Image (cartoon, rainbow, N blue to C red; front, side):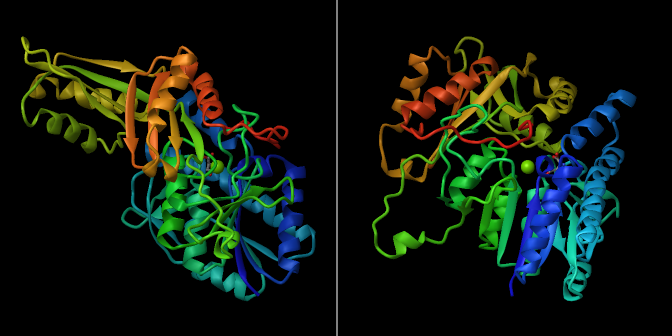
Length: 427
Ligand code: ASP
Ligand code: MG
């Protein structure tokens, strides 16, 4: 008998019928003799609806109260799912993140898990119950307030619990058959990936691929936990995120590692340009200290060559749109002290990234990527690279075209049929 942690996303439990379908799947797993711990997201677009509700009553809802509100979404689905399982004659118990022992820091809206003490889950499993845990939430170690882990955070709850419980596998159930070479909502000819290394998956998630939460991949990598991403709407084999070699490779069949594993995109970022920064040592440090003090994570940074006459330079960086206002306010307050001329804010940008471990040893990948965009008439505004990733910023309205052009240029289009999207809006 093994212990399986299964996570079901919002589109898999969007309504009563879906909840019943998922309940049957869970009961089937239990009947095969496994201990089952389930992590569930809020039903359908509940989280977005709750955010809209909050914004209707307050322009800037206090983080503590927003977290309290949003965690209600997962409470609804966990209770409803436990009821649906009970109706099938199996014992199920639902637990909030706090009851499940998900301990976090106190940064509302993007808390980090610092410990998992799943005593109550263990006890429920030992009694033969199915444990249902509300994803995306925890409790702060210091303030004892309820926190959330950031959008898409239920994946991280699942992997963190799986690691703490010593599960054999963490299954992430979603509305597509696995991880694809691009988002099938934008590129219908995208192909499903059978296995992907945690390193590549980390780059995909960090580059905007929403199929898995970034912290979930970090966690799985740290604990060497295999993650199986698959559809709750079909019984097909999904995608394995694992650093174990594929069985065929072990048998010496000489499976060649593809150079490129996929194209990711991100439209959640904005760009801030600090105009007219004195080109002196220490100025960049001052700017980024201000941003860091506001608890904001940056992505790309570009500093332009300074004009010799003025001795001034421009520094641009990208950050989550949701942090845009906070960053602008913080920088505005520091304008006099740092001595820059002005700030520009641009939220009409998109980022496209090409990811592949094979890039390390294959020259010409960037030339090919730039050529594909040139041919499509798409202008590049910023560039950043890692050993296994190339990212470019374009105008938001050309982002989908950029993804498709690059996907085609690297021969990733599948000849066989279109990828199936079973549900959800992808937001
Ligand atoms: N319900 C939360 C969200 O929409 C968490 C999740 O789905 O993982 O972001
Ligand atoms: Mg998700």
